[in-house]
Image 1 (cartoon, rainbow, N blue to C red):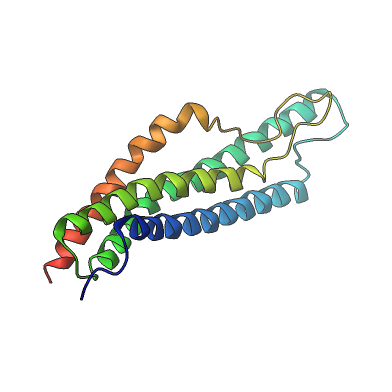
Image 2: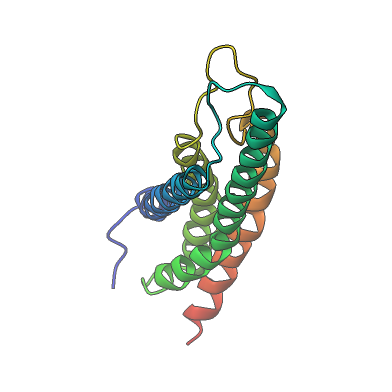
Length: 175
């Protein structure tokens, strides 16, 4: 079989699949955070409210801590799914008859860049579930995630995903 798609298009397909996975993970995280807020509200705990005093501050603190836990777990799950997606896409990309170098470029670079895109999309979508602080209330309404200050970590975490994609492609081509 002759290569019918350029390497750039193949990498774009891998990145697009990671982006779709990022949307799915982000929406799932969003729904999880929304569900957690709903459960807390049904128990009489909310991030906002007009009542004052120490009871309201404690309630807000509990809500913020619990939402932080849910947010961190959702983001962590997204990070852990990156190498798994890299492996699946690495094996899939090896099914095309092309040179080892082309397979390595498509699966390795596609998985690395795709992981970054997936995580950024997932975090941005999950962040939509975080309620904005109410005017005059302390900012204890939910978790906060400074995407810009964490880009280095996200890029570093993409390295194992790219590596897994590359190795999976290499070994799958040996079948």
